[in-house]
Image (cartoon, rainbow, N blue to C red; front, top):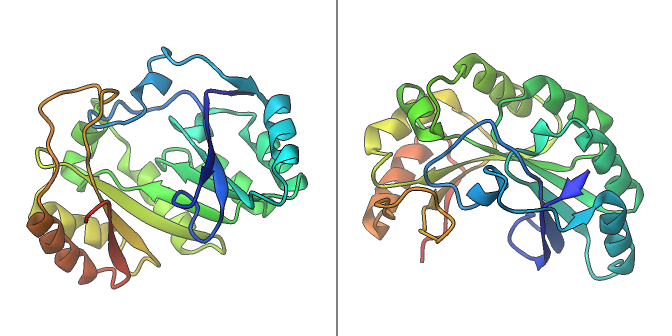
Amino acid sequence: MKIHGIQKMTLLDFPGCVSCTIFLGGCDFRCPFCHNFELIDGTLKPTMDEDELIAFLESRKGLLEGVAITGGEPLMNKDLINLIKRIHDTGYRVKLDTNGYHPEYLKEILDTGYVEYVAMDIKNSPEKYAMTCGVENVDLDVIKKSISLLMNGNTDYEFRTTVVNELHEEADFVKIGDMIKGAKRYFLQRFTDRDSVPYGNLTSPSFDKMHKLLKIAREFIPNTELRGVE
């Protein structure tokens, strides 16, 4: 498997774990606020292969504890389960990011016991889900299967939503709350613009708006917190 990018050390991507983050290519969605669009459109070429990654991890033992796998959408890579096993067998904890659109493969991976933590994106309220994903249609039953899998499983997890002024309003978080009511952990992340974001004219919510949304979300998921809000 080809690795399209690596952040060699982070304290943020894997809760409670000093980790590196690896980036895999490909995604089902075309979210207009995506920070990693070069992983989706193919402009970012691979930086290492799987063997080189394992060699890097071997050299960082004692410095790193875990590996966060993100994208793109990692579950589009059918060799992902083998990569996760190799990382696990090297002695590292594994965290997986996903958009929730591959529940069967997600279950297969979780059943191995090699993944310790999953972060799943909740893009928006049901009516605005496809628009927020930048595609014509999204099968919400598939998304709900992944939500149920995490909420009823044994793997630690979080749900998270990147909040964009032009895409999200207060009513959306009532509907999101209904989708994930009683979840273990939920984060609202404030969108920040970057050169790699594919669409312009998107803006970050204010401090006040984020706290209003936090209050709404906590009515459904008491353990809701903000990320990227000073």
